[in-house]
Amino acid sequence: MINYFKNIYQVSKALVQGMMVTGSWFFKPAVTVQFPREKLTTPERFRGALTFDKDTCTACNLCVKACPTACISLDPAVDPVSKKRMAKVSWYQIDFGKCNYCRLCEEACPTKPIKSVRHTHNYEWGMLERKEMFVKWTRETAVTSSAGSAVAPV
Image (cartoon, rainbow, N blue to C red; front, side, top):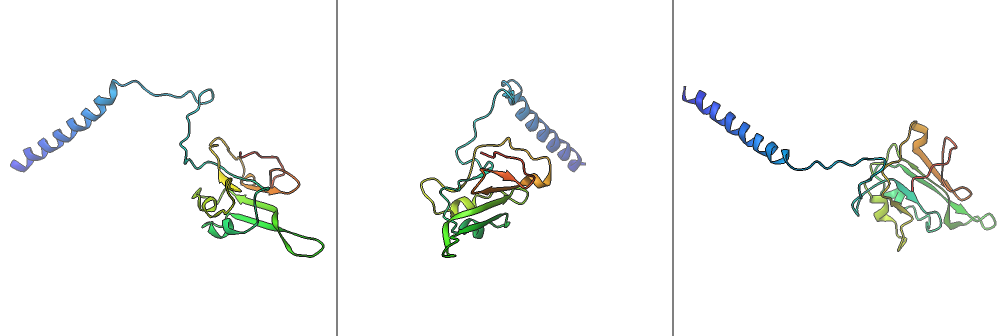
C-alpha cells in the first residue's frame, strides 16, 4: 500500500516539474522567422552545399581519398602533347545523394587561402530528381548537372 502512494507522489512530482518547464516558456515571446522574406544567419562553421573552384584546384585527389562515401570524383587534365598530367582538372563531380556533409574533403584540400572544394552557407538548394544530385564542373562550363540544366550551388 505504501508503494502505491509512493508511486503516485513520484508521478505527481514529475508532472509538476514538467509543467514548470513548460510554464517558464509559456510567457516568453515566440521567435518566428517569416522564411521567404527573412532568413536566419547561419553559424560560421555551418556545412551547406559544397562548391568547387576549378581555378584553384591542383587535381591532387586528396578530397577524393578523404571522402568516406566516395561521392567525389575528378579527372586530371592531361597535356595533349606530352601526355603528362597537369595540375588542373578537366572535370570534377560530386554526388549530393551520397554526400553526408562531413567536411573531410574540405579539410584535406591543400589549396590556401581559399579551398578549392568548400562548404557554402547555402541551405536552400533543393533537387527534384535523382539525376539532379550529380553535379559536374568542367573546364568549359561553370556548373552542370547530368540532366544538362545549369545549377548554382553557390
